Length: 265
Image (cartoon, rainbow, N blue to C red; front, side, top):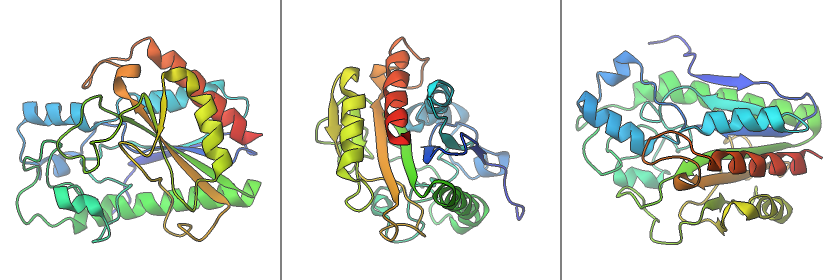
């Protein structure tokens, strides 16, 4: 397990687009060697994937890229977050370690064992996490060099009902939650997003999820890298927990396209 994995895709957009749609949690695929280290049986694993996967968000990003006036770039994780979660800190800085959900999960959404006690995360971090982080860093650097800025829009979804793993899930659960960062989310970006998603049914800020994803090379260092997390409540566009899309997807695509067009001008 030493070769660089083909576990993510950078899908080019327009040369003059500063936008990267980051889709980290849309996939269900787990390579066989990684599956061997998960203690759930096949049925339990499928149920866990239903709960933990941000289903259809890759399709959402693809539809937005096709509809936008200036096509955004897309960085898409092709493996399940049960392999590694590229948005976690890979060390003790990660608060989700408290519930067994650091860069390599050891517990499920319902806090049941996912991997054996004492499982070493470093093999998976070296194999999957670090190559992903380097590639995303390079993608952001390329947008900076090409356009003078980079705008990371993190595309997520979240369940209607709070799951046991959520550390901050006792607040509002609006149809659209916008996660922000004090350094990387300027007020004008947040305002554009609030306007774009106003017709989806309601917008909230940093509840039940907060923060944004920015590669560590730029984190709290480069103000020309801006970022926003978009969390779509799943009942607005799909059947929960892991079912098909519904008619609401069209409205979500339109709203996210409006945001991409606004920040690309």
